[in-house]
Length: 124
Image (cartoon, rainbow, N blue to C red; front, side, top):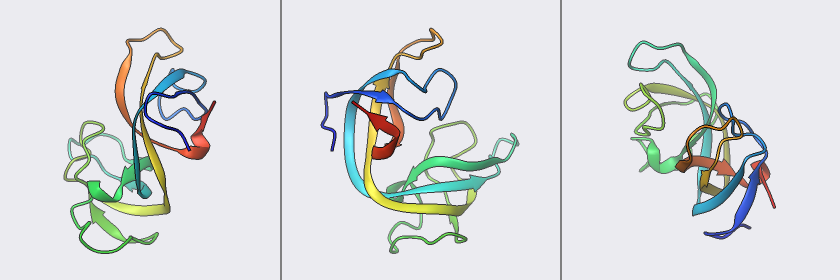
């Protein structure tokens, strides 16, 4: 739906300063996106229903799409303690995922190549 370089509004706040921020699409990929729960490898607090990890960021990705309840190993490094963590698939959706650059609404520094948003989390 959205193309690289297109301006969008972030409709979901995965982190502070994100919801309502203006953003530019920096990447678009067709894949399966997963919501996952995991204990970070650095001993941090358990992450529940983390959105999103894509199929290619799971070490067992040579298999077909995963189903809710399956256990996987994360290769994603979106946050400290994520890479190498064992996770449970909470939900899965086959869709386009978007990487974006945005200026946080709380005045923080510009974020480049934030991974990931799905279409319904963006607006024009």
